[in-house]
Image (cartoon, rainbow, N blue to C red):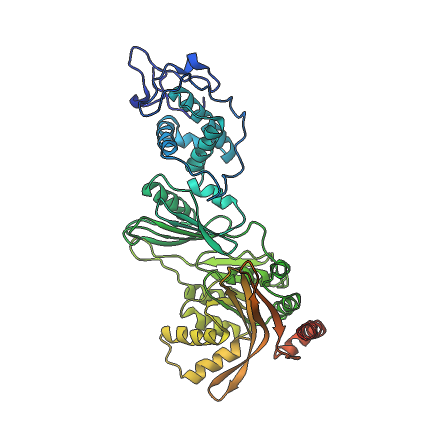
Amino acid sequence: MFGKRGNDDGNRFTPEFRQPASAPATIAPAAAGPADTAVLARPAATPQPSAPVAPPARRAVEAPPMAPEPRRGREKSETYYDTKSQVFSALIDTIDLSQLAKLDPESAREEIRDIVNDIIAIKNFAMSIAEQEELLEDICNDVLGYGPLEPLLARDDIADIMVNGSKNVYIEVNGKVEQTGIRFRDNQQLLNICQRIVSQVGRRVDESSPICDARLPDGSRVNVIAPPLAIDGTALTIRKFKKDKLTLDQLVKFGAISPQGAEVLKIIGRVRCNIVISGGTGSGKTTLLNCLTNYIDRDERVITCEDSAELQLQQPHVVRLETRPPNLEGEGEVTMRDLVKNCLRMRPERIIVGEVRGPEVFDLLQAMNTGHDGSMGTIHSNSPRECLNRIESMIAMGGYSLPQKTVREIVVGSIDVIIQAARLRDGSRRITHITEVIGMEGDVVITQDIVLYNIKGEDANGRLLGEHVSTGIGRPHFWERARYYGEEQRLAIALEAMEKRAD
């Protein structure tokens, strides 16, 4: 059989699994009966059944598409983990990983399933068909994928996966956090899986570099913090992206924004307003940024700058840039500010910064103010006014000794619209403000709200009830820009519809 290491006597297992030399063990076919499987003694830790249980024929039962849902699913026993550990050890001693790596994922999975079936037959474990299939799937995930995380990554209803050491795994579903019955074999297995994830994007996590940001192939955001900084074992956090990319129309169905408010956002994206999306952690800033980029003209050159590439733009002319951490010698770091500076030399029409955290905000503002209309970025803050204050603070952090009024003039001349996203206490995500930055009076930045979200109460299930309302602004400050792009009539209709709805 392909991929197995054999000795001269045909024995494919380590001495732990061998019979005495006078009776060498041989691999029995996967569908062998009791006479074939009796050549190996059962481990003492496994109870002896009245009659050996023959394993099912190869591939007779297809593996389930995903494991049972956490909490509602059966929590695995210590006996299951002990059996899995023995089978996994035998598999690693049996299979030639270098040969396995040459196979495509599906063929490799088939090969592993065949070998594990053989091992179960020889070890003569008493397992039901369902337990054996579950064991096969778990071991395939350990070798080829992300181990116990695989069933969680396969579910599209999970927003976040939070692993607090090897024994505690939490998920967020519908805005609520719940504990799962999933666990890792030990802390070393968890750290190995984290290293497998981050190595795919050329990064590393170990004792010398215990903090790492990375991403999965689908763009899902990954953060790892390992011991000694994480006291109770490696902490892994995954912000999952849905397989089907969300659009503004879908956000309307979820109640994140009203249909009229969505129309205003589409126009804002279309007419090249400079946009900052503000919100707290987990409020949906990146999702909203992805949605707005759908309304960028397909012939525009867009350059994105991110710490870990998460944005999923649909335009054909997109250049994606990503920061780089320092190497083991502390050299080679490329910061967000380096990327923003460099992309100014790449003839961008729009610059999109995934998340603004520091002095690079000044370079982004300069880009917005020097001919790159329609640029976008996200900032952590709790309100549009606080967003402006944070921008000032981040510019000061960069060591710029500019007068406060000068900084505010740069902000006013650069940013057109602030969109505020929030995660409410019932777990729902809403766009709470669409706010314009319109100018200055003295040293004060003047803003005006176009759309607000008003909370009216909650229903019997604890879900908050509210609605998006117009503030009565008939002609926003970007009206002339909308007219330049031929969108003024569409904007007027949307704003008028919101006013009527509010009445």
